[in-house]
Amino acid sequence: MNDIVSFGYEEVARDEKTRRVGGVFSSVASRYDLMNDAMSGGMHRLWKDRFVRRVKPRAGETILDMAGGTGDIAFRLAKNGAALTVADINPAMLGVGMERARKRGIEALVWTEANAETLAFSDKSFDAYTIAFGIRNVTDIPAALREAHRVLRRGGRFFCLEFSTTQWPGFAEVYDAYSHRLVPQLGKLLAGDADSYRYLIESIRRFPDMPAFEGMIRDAGFTRTAVEPIAGGLVAIHSGWKI
Ligand code: SAM
Image (cartoon, rainbow, N blue to C red; front, side, top):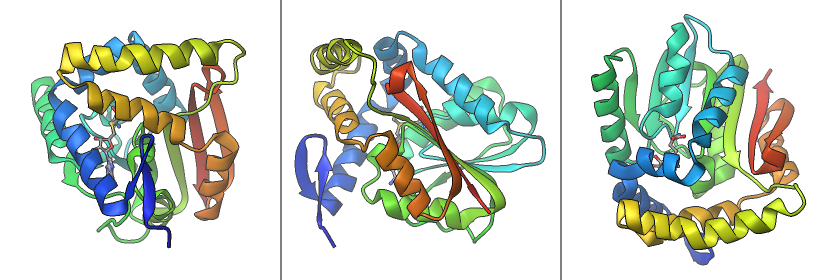
């Protein structure tokens, strides 16, 4: 087993990556939502709306929103009456999410601390599994995908929203310059933390491209996999079924 993994552009031991990713999200938790708006010019809201439309949550379904952080996806998914469990490895992110839910009067969500690689849920517990902007931060991605497959019922669906590689000519260069130069500065200005935002950008570059990630989803046991690129693949929705 390869014991070295990427942490942004650095190569680190597995435990070290998990610890440092924890440090990143503990550091940014209180400013996370503000920074998402600042970095994406509010676009992340549209991407998340589109993602949730693809999931098509229904009343009475059970959905696990993994790496759910401050609740952005779960709040949207729960609107139609689905039963939501929000799981995240980071208590600071969950804390911000629970406070947001309290302020919005959303009481029905279950919030739980969990590592996507090793879930305590029984086999076949959920109708859908969602993970948004989370999977690239997970140390052992194949293990997390296998766990997603295990906890889904037959007929269950997997949906992942993640940054990917844009194929729009010319746009990649502009985006590269923006993300590498401006995002860490924004992070310093608004969240007092340039290094965390440097990691978040670098981790996007290290994430597998769309065909490679789709292959990983298939390797975990999912069928009828699909990829929907957004903005030429700047962001992508990957999906698959457990049958
Ligand atoms: N899904 C939320 C959203 O779209 O706004 C939060 C995304 S945030 C960029 C990434 C989240 O992944 C963080 O809350 C982080 O704690 C969580 N995370 C990282 N590694 C994880 C793991 N191994 N298991 C569960 N959550 C993890």
